[in-house]
Structure formats: C-alpha cells, structure tokens
Length: 74
Image (tube, rainbow, N blue to C red; front, top):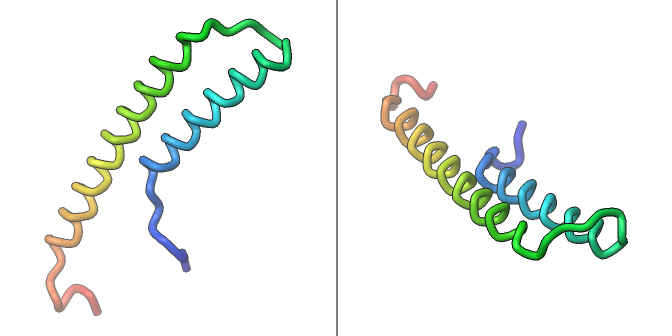
C-alpha cells in the first residue's frame, strides 16, 4: 500500500532542479564550462512542465473520483 499518492509534477520539478545543481557543481569543480545563463531556461522550462503535469494529474484524479458513485466504492 502506498503511504502517499504519486505526484509526477513534484518529481519533474525535483529532477530539473537536481540537473541544474549538477550542471553548476560540474562547472564549479572544473569538469566542464557552463555559461551562467543556461540555468534560466532550464529551470523555467522545467517548472512550467512540472506545473502542466501537476495540473493534468489533478484534472485526471478529479475526473476519476467524480465518475465514481457510492456503490462503486465497495
């Protein structure tokens, strides 16, 4: 049994922010050279994608719950 419901929007946001952190950590460690402005579209696009996924997930869950009746929950 799941302890909480799966939230793919938060998963995507976390992955994008970890990726931005890894990019800058690699730049700080001298592994590669990343321009300072790379993180802006990465984080902005990732958060917009996460918001869209969270919105769609909420809509799907509400639609599934609305379609159920009291007799269907047994």
